Length: 530
Image (cartoon, rainbow, N blue to C red):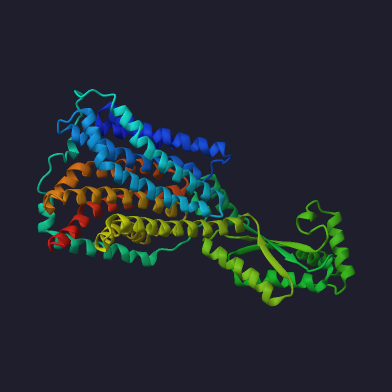
């Protein structure tokens, strides 16, 4: 995370070559995540593998808000306006889209607050409050800093992205709109086809790079001793001292033999029944268990008197027995099937009740619920944003054009993931929320500028105005975030790596859709004098 922050500052310095260009976005970012983290600590929340990335998400939101305003100020300063006048026009043209993007982002992440998984709900609250704080600082603190400058202050051009006097782009789009549309249809079809290969799955061991101690140690254990995943199955005999019943013990042994035979990933099972069977063989030289409760009790007491871990296998009232299962590491989907098999076997083949517990089980359910929660949050965010834009545009045609460049990047990157063999895990699911937030931000700014310009200009001039006034901010936001998130590629925690890959690809696809496909679609509509 410190590397990511340093990367942001260095990029701002390289791009703007101006101390104000560094201070304005940086102070919004730093103030926002310091306050959010302070609030988290005051509320008693601790950093975990979800909330530790709060600064990254807040940086993305804060950069999007502050850069659009700052770049608009530069745009008007280059038109020879004074500092105050340039800021007035920048705020006037960007206040509404910044408000809309901040509110939609805040509401989208706020949907995570309803998750039953506490780290997810706290993440939602943190990012939601961060979006509001970033908006407040972008329209108060950032302008206050800018107003300290004199009218004579000269802003520097971003030499390799100087769109301030652009012309002809709108005409190029209008002339080639059908060709552009055809190219994108082919591109979308090819990438979207990869979705058929994608899986909503994960493997907690594969979350770590191969050279980490966690993974290498687990792989050594799995290869040379036993499976590294552990399940604890608690069997209820339905009565106090029920574990002494020979039928109960035999049913446990039957289950252990069945699960070893039916599931190759099961490497070892251990329960008090195994120990009873072992003691019986040594005493009677027979594989047949005794049929009396007293004999079973004698064997159990024998083990109890000679073992320190007896209470880990049997409850104090001798009603419950724990079966420990070691399995090879595998995907969450297979873990869920194994858990279901265990529960179904006991419910269908016996009168006893079984409950699968343990850390592996908890993590398996958490993985499923986290991904499900995040997917539901994304769908809720899309619905909320769509409804908000419907109220703003009051036109279904424009609404469909707005939704396309925001949903398409997620669909396209899902196809890329399918081709690359990347499953949807925690990191990927979280990245979708960031992607959607930034994509919506750029699209809202594009539409706001376009609808304002089309009132007094023709289509070609309107597109030129949008690109010249907002093109820099859209491109720089994507560029800075891409380089910043690229820092996560060096992480040894693979969800961070997947987050970086997916986010970088999707943000650049979203930018391409906003700057090329969206104008082409608008051109087709406005050519029909709609």
